[in-house]
Image (tube, rainbow, N blue to C red; front, side, top):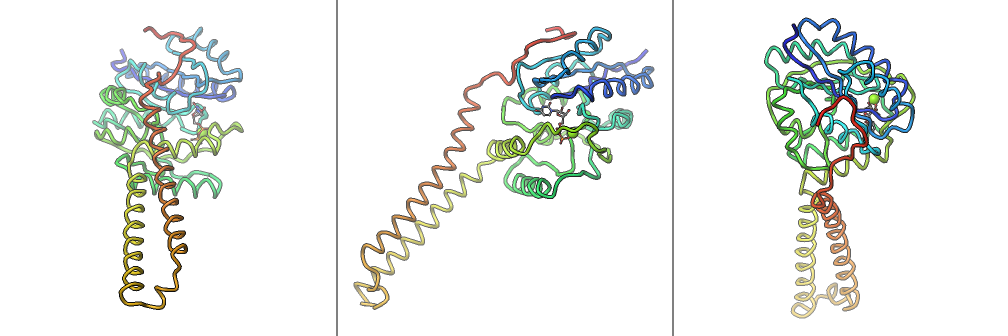
Length: 317
Ligand code: UDP
Ligand code: MG
């Protein structure tokens, strides 16, 4: 008899080609592990517009270990994973991409490390093919994120990971909507182990995360986890005020006390213009940062539901 239940969480968006394959692979893996582990497969449909929902209807009908949550629209992978984690009933959960870029054969290795006491097992990618531009942008993102925030993310760690049930329970307490799941998981702590793998090419031509979507995710992550930009605006304001205060003071002293010719060459309106332009720049930059924060606060305070479920299959409330 299997003693442990493993919940596999598979978020997907328009993956009609990949779904039958990942399902077959997962089934095969758990066939091999059936002495020790039982499984449930939680598929979260992040608003697919292709034939994916029909495929899932078929799978839920033929296998009641397939659970299906269908969102009413596309909410993004981070939210889809969060919905999956809120519906886990297993002793451990494994997050895996539907597109087969996370090789399912690593699952037994994940389980082994978990059995040996790890609370989180993280899949680390050894290689990753991306355009130079995207590589550059993600390099900058990780550098900035890790420098300014207490939510640390390593560039080569993936969402492919196993979480003990106690980690899942803690994760489900997070309420922020601007979220990056692996960042929040890192913040939680717990005992971690790593498994290294090479990322295979995407078999089916489609990138769920296009660049604007990634850029938005990066911006939200930076703003929701750090106050540094606001502080920087403050520092900028302080230094400009200090510099201009000093310059104005020197000009005043040079002109009226020492009668210095350089100081006298500044007309009153020239001084005023420079001062005003810099003050306007200062005010605008502060406003820009404030706007970012207010947008974020508004988003969190509105306290809308994280996601909207259109349909559930094989899942009890
Ligand atoms: N995905 C999702 N919602 C989205 C975009 C992607 O659920 O809005 C899923 C996608 O189907 C896949 C996983 O998230 O299972 C990873 O997406 P993708 O392969 O596009 O990202 P990458 O491999 O570049 O990290
Ligand atoms: Mg992928």
